Image (cartoon, rainbow, N blue to C red; front, side):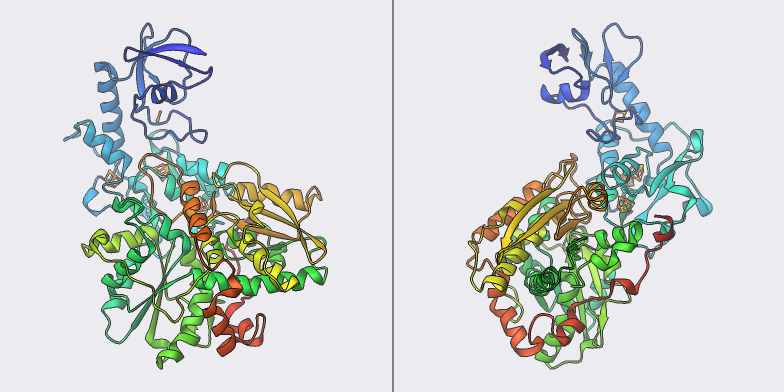
Length: 586
Ligand code: SF4
Ligand code: SF4
Ligand code: SF4
Ligand code: FES
């Protein structure tokens, strides 16, 4: 252990602990901007500088380890003055229009400047202008170069966690800035739209394309019927940035809030997660029994970030993807083809919106392959953050609303559908129903819990082997694209063999999705959110997708059986029907 004194407090910490972490352990918070534990410890912003007795210069606390006997002052007049100057210098290259910035109120830089009492800036303003400041407004990921503080967190997350390497530094000296790597434009890049760079950006420099006005316009249009679906993972996070305690942020209160916004019908995507299981589970059994998974596994296809990654980085494996559409798209197809008939209206009258924990869903619903004769499955995908903004815009205070049930026709869902939002959930749900399809009876509901993934997104993946009708099925569950790349390498090199693999692009699965609320203190929330979903599953009367009565009715009345011609038309897709822009460079 190393003994140090911080602000007069004696602290003993393990060797190699940074000053910043040592202070944290002593309950002392040192302001910081660029630091991201284990990912970005480069000392770029110098906001975390502290004074050490006997040292001439101040040192960044985020990347300097403690040494025996150090006497550290985090808030000495010199440290405070230097911190203020460093933030003023950052602000001189920053577009400080907080009133029109979606990050206002939850921005690390804004908080820091306010806390330091910066009311004026002595340094001349130096902003990027002209073409270098332009960014396509129609791409699902938006970047404002004048709100970038060059902390490089996005570079590190995209590179080290996701292994996609979209961002890089360009220019030199004071002209250095963060831009798309290899001189590409974002639309030509292999960005998978996982949104993890957005989640970790400390300012408003990165965000999703804002589509809330389109949703408001559809709600206001008297000729449109608006239908909204909410993904399983949204219920675990929507209350966070509204300051709602978990007992208030229930899924039924969210249903009430969506009705208060003016949506005509409110449904739960967990319903179509059950439908996905019926189709994907049946497809897996067919492929497995036909020996198609002997060499390469079947991959789940419900994460559009993963589908983009596979098509961009290893397009030769496209055929290994399940052809089942994601729950978002399946729900959309059922709304336009089945629900419209039930309502007795033309499908074009329906405007179908989804609330997703994900940025890639915006690109998925726009794919040319994601529509049927009845039109596009989903007209608009919004993130959890956009839902929160819509509620704020309308001054809806969900805690004052009574809980309401979802609309009934496509309402029921099983616990298996809910766990789709956590890593391993799709695999577990699929195995529950695959067991039933093979054996004609249900397994104990928790029989496959060994597949639950690494919710904290740490390195590696989870593997498990199960007996299915006398045959061994080898499964793997992975989240985070860096982990996925390593799994693919192991499979291709013959070091690992699986029949069925679940992949989620975001660490921890959709619970940690790139469209979820950003944490002001950089807390990883996927694990906590995932536990909420598993608790809902555990408490559900219905634990198996195939027992969902609304799913059974849908097959009876419209689809026939899983894999039928109608099911193929509505619920499956051709992954070869579009190209990833970065595929050639991947
Ligand atoms: S990024 Fe932060 S400081 Fe900059 S305009 Fe937005 S809220 Fe204000
Ligand atoms: S875009 Fe955000 S995360 Fe990336 S360098 Fe700029 S401020 Fe940092
Ligand atoms: S969205 Fe994902 S893939 Fe795209 S730049 Fe950000 S981290 Fe990289
Ligand atoms: S947080 Fe330490 S230098 Fe940026």
